[in-house]
Length: 97
Image (cartoon, rainbow, N blue to C red; front, side, top):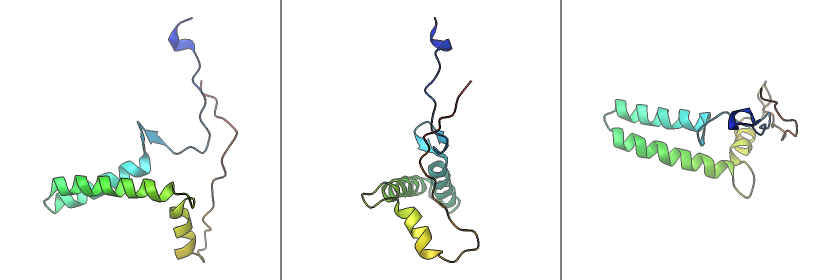
């Protein structure tokens, strides 16, 4: 049996989309910071600001008090027409193949 026929471990259905080790939302935050400050004429400051924003985003989403970004959405937008809902951790696995 070769390595290509071994099935991969399925991932949870509600796991965020990832590219390498980064979420797609983190990549978007980094690219927006970098491109915005690059337009203003400072590429290296844009890269540094993007990295700081990613670190801050990761810190706020993984604190001992829970996901502070979700709690912030509930705090600042309590009466929206479309309610912000939690994704409950899924025990259902996606079958690849």
